[in-house]
Length: 256
Image 1 (cartoon, one colour):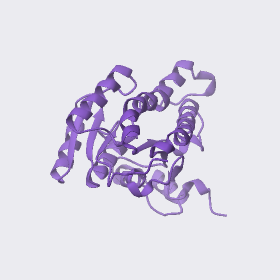
Image 2 (cartoon, one colour; image 1 turned 90 degrees about the vertical axis):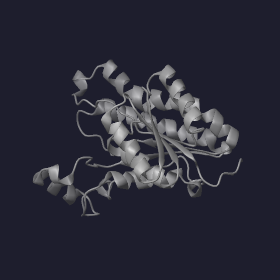
Image 3 (cartoon, one colour; image 1 turned 60 degrees about the vertical axis):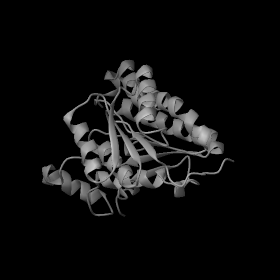
Image 4 (cartoon, one colour; image 1 turned 180 degrees about the vertical axis):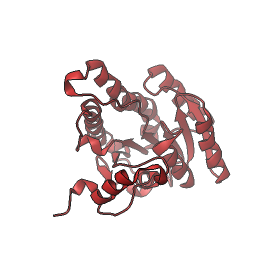
């Protein structure tokens, strides 16, 4: 077993971090002292704001545009990060595409492939690109963002739920294989986390949500970012192959 020799991870890549959960994760890892590679499909105002916010808070960040479902893009992305920030210690697989709803009888194979591209192909391409450096140094953290939907799928989300379960299987198999290199692989599964302002949520939706959550409050992107921060730390080096569900207890079901 190769021990974790570094004092702290220094460079993190957070895919799909130009907005939403990804941006909160990027900001949190920057506050933890990591240089953060902010990623999005295109250079846009939102992505640049994330970078500027991190810098204003005293952190280090750069934006890298790339399609993380494209092999050439991923290779160029990881190479560019290495040249500008250094080798990636922490990989957070967060990027996602459209998630259309459709009945089973209407879901095409291409719909499944579109979901698998983000939740299986993307992490495979990214891991192949970052693992050589992680293995060489004997340290690495791979954290995938899955979803409560994987184990509690609502109707008409079969393509999404199927791909998310494949992502979980990928995580567990990687965890076993990569543990001897000092590399941990885990997932964080958000519950319903509104990324817009809570005031924009209808009273009916808010009431139904709060009734289903024992914690008694709305979840926030920062709740997810904290879980990622913990798994990315040196101190979490004995935790691998795990799935942390961050849902305020909603998955426990209604109180009896």
